[in-house]
Each structure stands twice: as structure tokens, then as C-alpha cells.
Image 1 (cartoon, rainbow, N blue to C red):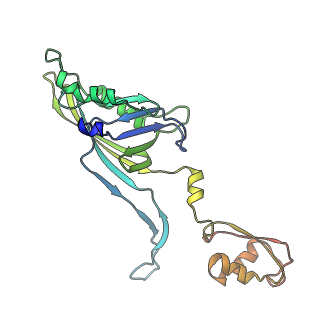
Image 2: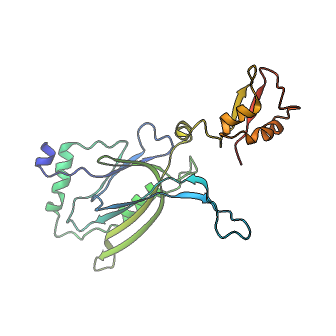
Amino acid sequence: MIETALGIIDKMRIEVYEKSDLKGDPLKTIFVQLNPEKYSMKQNVVFCEGQAIGASGNDLKYNRTEGEEVTFDFVFDSSGVVPPGKIVDGKGKVSLLSKVADSLEPAIVNLFEETKTVEKDVDEFRKLLMGYIGKTHQTSYLKLLWGGFTLNCRLKSMDIEYSLFRKDGRPIRAKVKCMFKGTVSYEVMLAKQDKTSPDLTHERVVNMNDKLSILAENVYDSSNYYIDVSKANNLLSFRNIETGVKIQFPPIK
């Protein structure tokens, strides 16, 4: 309520992590200088597009759903017109007093000082988001937080456009377009994955009166694969299987 009365706006922040699980405190937290005016989202489904010879069309087979892609435009401006951004260690909880000081900073710019450039701020931003980390041999893992929006992601691309310059040609304003691609850790991916999917390997223990064709139908929703299962398990007969035998049901290729 107090922040609203003072006209203080919650800034979008980007938490920077070394590891994909995004656990614990981040290495750094970036508070953007200006909240983006808009953002765009893209999701993509990939199909296998094999087509029979002589056919006029093809039957699309589902391959995978790729992580969502989100694009933001970030503005860097050192003219003193807008409050500065901030990069802090860890979670970077900013006090109300600090927020008030940041909101007043443009009003107390020294007119006799030469306007600083944005090159250093943009370069630090770039290194945090896409710089190579020698310890993990990876670029950073990121968490975008803005109001109710949260995305675990990594930076896919960055375009930098400079548009305002000092007399010496050094830039004092830049627009940085960033495309982020959603990502999940391996553990989270397994938790979300459908364990009953026919695209995963399954194991069943044969009980009394079990038939291979029925077991195959339970796994694949089709009894047509029981001969393939028999071959994969080197069974001498698919009709008489001993009770207690473990049967592997490989994924459909």
C-alpha cells in the first residue's frame, strides 16, 4: 500500500543460477531498468513428416513439444531520465528505502557531469545471461519473475540496438531483445512425464493365466506388438510363459 502511494513499481527481475535445478539462492539477481511494454510467447510442436512415395499427403506423427519461447525487449538508458537498473548478489531483496532512493535518482543527476555510456551495463547483462561458466561448461540457467509470470529458462538469442549517443559517439541508450527458451531439469522432466506412455520401456511380472497379447495391449493399447515383445525378450514361446518371469516392453519406434 505504501509503495503504491509513493508510485513505486515492482521491477521485473531475472535470477541467475549455475545449475539446472535452480535450487538455493541465485548467483545474481537482475532488476531491470524499465519493465517491458510487451512480450511475445511461442510454442512449437514437432512432427515426423515422412511421406510415402506417390502419396499426395502425409500422416503427421507426433515427435515432441518444444519448450516455450518468450521474447522481451529491455531498455538501457543512462541519460538520467529513468531510474537505473540494479544487479545484486543472491535473491536481492530490495528494501523500501532503497526503492525510494532509486525512484528519486533521475531527479538528482549532476548536470555538470558527462553522461555515462550504457556499454558497461549492457555488457554485464550479456555476460550474466549468456556468458560461459567454466565450472559447469554451460551458460546460465535463469528464472524470470514479473508479477504472476514465472519462467525457468535459458537465453537463446540476444539482439542489441543502440539509438542515442554522446558527442563522442558513445551510446547512452540501448534496446536489448532477448529470446528465452523454457527449460526443466531432468528430475522435473521425469516427474512430469507420463509413466504409462508407450514411448517408455515398461517391465511387467507375469502372473498366473497372463497372456502376452493382453499384457501388450495394456501397455501399447494394441495387441499387435506381442510378437515383437516376445522377440525382444528372447522367449521360446509367447503362449506358455512361466509365472514370475519379468517381461520388458520396449518403446515403440
